[in-house]
Image (cartoon, rainbow, N blue to C red; front, side):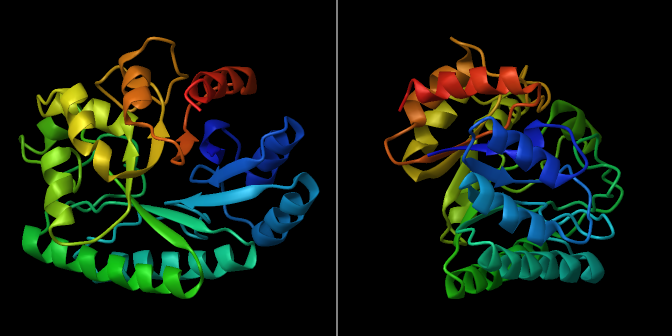
Amino acid sequence: MIYLSSSCIRKSNIAEVVTLYGERGIKNIELSGGTDFYEGIEDDLRALSGKYDLTYACHAYFPPPREPFVVNLASCNDKIYRQSIEHYEKCIRMLKRIDCKFLSVHAGFMVEVGANEIGRKLSSGIVYEEDSAYERFCNAYEHILKECTKNGIELYLENNVLSAENYEEFEYHNYLMMTDYSSILKMREKLDFNLLLDLGHLHVSAQTLRRDFRDECSRLKKYVKWIHISENNGISDEHKPLKAGSEILEEFHKVYVQGLNVTLETIGNIEDILESMKLIKRTH
């Protein structure tokens, strides 16, 4: 099944995005970050689902918190750690009420990330002790998985993106969990999880870490349970529309197997988005 991320359209109100998708016949929507908090989000999503016969999935930073912060399940800052877990507890309760069966979360960060840094250059001013960060992340993930299971929701874990800019800022230490094959396998030794492979993230991380993108995809294929896809230049996570014959799209065709869910995460106008969806559908 192909989902379209709500983050593809830059609007502050999630209901406006979902309405636009519904009017264009898009039935499967992944609720993601990029919109603002407001009272009544849940009521709007429930009403729009009924009006347009929608199926929802949920990813990472949704619903938007009243006060913005960076969700980090590996945080060694007690306040951020508690906020992050509570964010997903609240999210799971909402997902049950709007009949959403899928939730995906990001792997953790071993640096403290400010709300104004997400999607931009990160600071390494506060670095967490690695073992402690992994222990916290695994404990939080297991707790969230338990809550998901109780509520009939499937949970997925997404690989992070390590840009060259951040790697340089980190003085060539990798402080992000699950950026490439070796670090994804490291997490698998600690946790049993459904891998959501973001090909755009892997494309950037592979170049940053001097890995072969095609080889990384090939080695990870057997673990993949969901795919995120968008285009980029290998330097930063640009979320550009898909291009026929691109390296990312070619690897998508190799990694994809029948039955996998796929989320398109390309930013642009609705026509560009629909063209990218056509490129994905050629694999189905």
